[in-house]
Image 1 (spheres, rainbow, N blue to C red):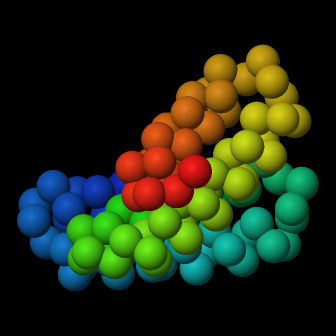
Image 2: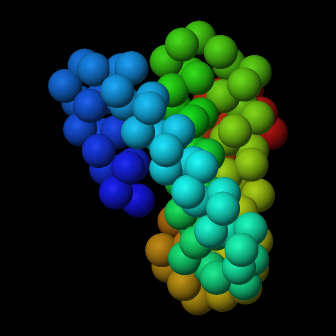
Amino acid sequence: MSYIKLGNVFVAAGQLEPARTAFEQSLAIAERLAKADPSNSEWQRDLSWSYAKRAEMDERDGKQREALAWAQKSLAIHERLAKLDPLNATWQKDVRLSRARVKRLGGE
């Protein structure tokens, strides 16, 4: 998540290339951790947000199809986590945000 936060700072400063690099570093770490322990919900959530950031950057670049694919991957994780704990308000909010992103990008 630190690389995501760093990437967000770069985006806010208009420095998109360093932002992309930070988001890619976040994604690489999140994928390794999530694969190492699929039962760790926090690592799964971190992976979903890394996918969301990748979608955000592809959308900025006008790569709608790629952005949608990343957004759908993020949504799938959020939905899976929300089903595990339907009373977790944070996870339910994550699902709503992910669904809105997928819809905005032209998905169902």
